[in-house]
Length: 412
Image (cartoon, rainbow, N blue to C red):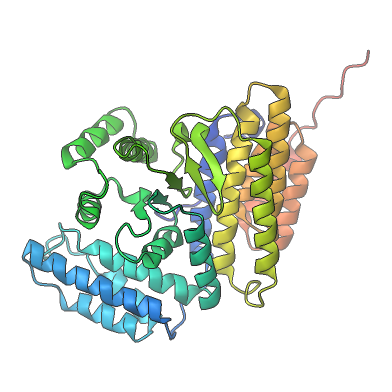
């Protein structure tokens, strides 16, 4: 997704009245994207593990195969990119990649050739921005969260890139799809070519019809979200019987009733879930308790902002689902139960990354809906202390402090 700046304005967005799903998960998405540019640059030089080198070789072979299939000559810069990446010159490879595929008149521009290069770059950036051992742990944790044969919709760059790298072959053991690329016809053709008859994907005319319908009634980001979510659901519908896993990206509002935590990611149930059971909540809580303890025992974890942030994003996404249920459940006892699950999950987010913007936005939204402005202010103060350079926390604090105090309870 493109980088975005998040503006927190209580007068424009009265969070104490925001009880829609979009109020929670849109903030989760936008805040994560806003912080993506805060990460340190890639290392100049890195010795990639054998798995990454083998993946780079496979992706380069695929690039040549696409060029042969669509009958065009690869630009020399593409070959140079792979040579630079294999040499471990991560920052130089990133610079080469950023200049590729900019010329819309270049041979092959309208083909899927960009996609295997992008997936190579996602692997390069993951391992060159974080501790390689921790990145491998993240990759292993993601794969362990994905049942064999499942459809997996990756949302973040590492959420797409690492499972693609970890697969032995396309669809083995999982089918990785990027939810952020569905409106790009070149990506959809790449997915069709990559998976062939193994799974069913919407044809070009179906995708175009969905896009036209979505943009007829909406504009900008709202239209993009509507079209992307409809294509995602079309893919699910065309592959009945497969387990579907989801890593949060765009706020596909119609999915929220069907989402449930599953390790680092979430599953999408075939039908809306009446509730998330106490046993499933306990399993989710205990999974993250063990994971946080194990991660904090690793010496590199505290200093690896990139990997730490990805883990925190995954936990914030499931916390956001609990928060949505807390604000939409019709039964007061169920709302309270989900409120407790959400606030516990947000606490686990901060244990991973104390200044996690997306979680702060979502928890403040939740707390204001539950008429707890003092607690919301405490959350923001703690976040600002953990991340003093985050200007949005300062703005949130000022706006919360300026809000009028709630009226005193009526005397009997």
